[in-house]
Image (cartoon, helix red, strand yellow):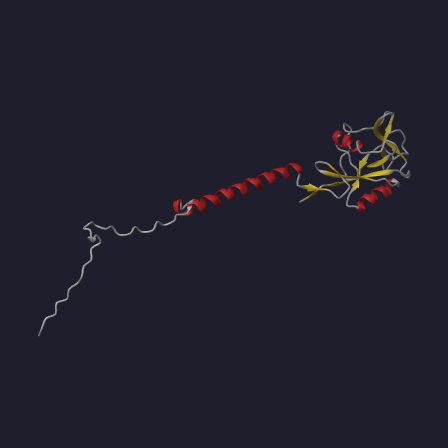
Length: 202
């Protein structure tokens, strides 16, 4: 049996060329690297930065609205820190004035502080008088606010010499001798009026 000799041709990487010099294999093409490949954590850092930015914006937005009270008032009402005010240019007696306010989800004005009095009088017509939510139903000088707030003797703004008549059981704000103040009048008198409601908080 004849034996077959198999020759394997072995090629070395470094072969001699015809001139006898060793030839180098062709260089492998350089792979393009993106920023993400150079820094594998880059997408996570970008996402974290965006989340922090959004969080800061949300906090700033929240603080800005907190300063405003997160509240709103109906259109054409005067806005304060906690209340909304409506000044009527129509005329009515005290009882119907209060009914008109109730119909708007409010009540006649209740003045609790000097600051509130000053805020309101800046918006009033100097030639008009306006009902507020203070009355003396029994004519006994027992003044009552419509919202049952206590009548505070230290926060009153009566004109000099007022209240002056037991038969005048309702109160207006008007201008006398250049000063705004309170005056008691008969409840049947037709005057403008001022309504107040709490801010609508969102």
